Length: 128
Image (cartoon, rainbow, N blue to C red):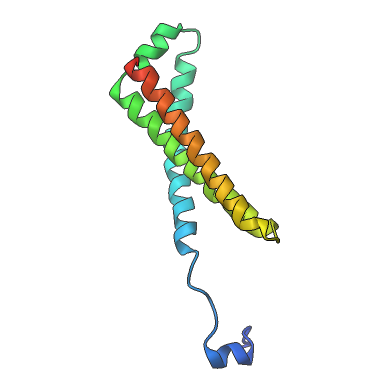
């Protein structure tokens, strides 16, 4: 049986092949996706359970340590996962010199949104 090689003879001769990078990005995206599943279920269930309740009731709930921690965790994982996913889209579909700038802009926007959300949660939780 003949095994067909997909690499060119030149690449086999000089040892070129996989750059051996990208595994960390792939793994980070999968870990953040898995973490988002229970966090999103908790968040949606919490919001549904507070429908019809007043602002004071919601703020009282958000001031509990579990709600503060889990809300901050969902913000961190959500915007990290978003930045990773948008980076892949940009790397796949932007074929100009603007690729690097677009990736940086996406990362900065996601970071700014996460920080803004975390500050808002802390502001509400601690009544500052």
